[in-house]
Amino acid sequence: MPAPRPQPRFPEPDTAPFWEATKRHELTYQTCTSCRAVVFYPRSHCTTCGSSDLTRRISQGLGTVYTFTVIMQSRHPAFAELGPYAVAYVDLDEGFRIMTNIVGVQEPVKNVQCGLRVKLCWHDQGEGQLALPMFEPA
Ligand SMILES: [Zn+2]
Image 1 (cartoon, rainbow, N blue to C red):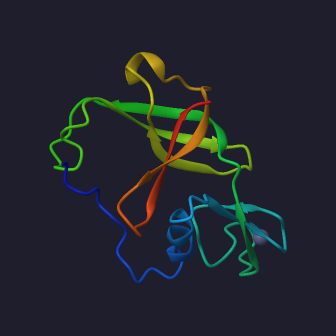
Image 2 (cartoon, helix red, strand yellow):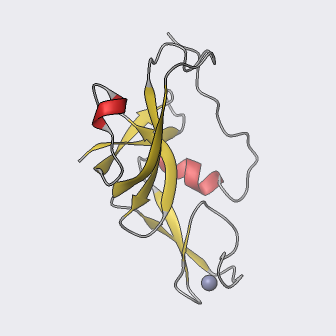
Image 3 (cartoon, rainbow, N blue to C red):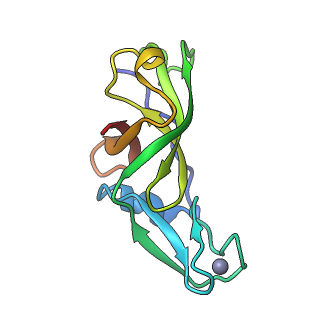
């Protein structure tokens, strides 16, 4: 059994609701009520106009690989057994970008491409624990 992945450290007021939602397998993002900007990662204010009037929404979990790299080996105990794995930026259809892993592919170097359509999948981190949003080919 590999070591657990690094986890967020709480208290973390801006991102705690995001992580709480992952336990329900909900990928949340925010929109600004004042200027309608999409805000991600989770914050207490709009990055466009500074308003604190933000609405939390649930993503449908469909997106496109913006860019990626493949880590061939990692000595961190949580990643050492993975073999090559893809770290990517995914552009969600709702208009935000998330750093994540692309999973469910045989060979990340060959099977992941910029522009690849992907869908959300969840990697639970233990009973009652948060889950990590990852993506696989759609
Ligand atoms: Zn705004």
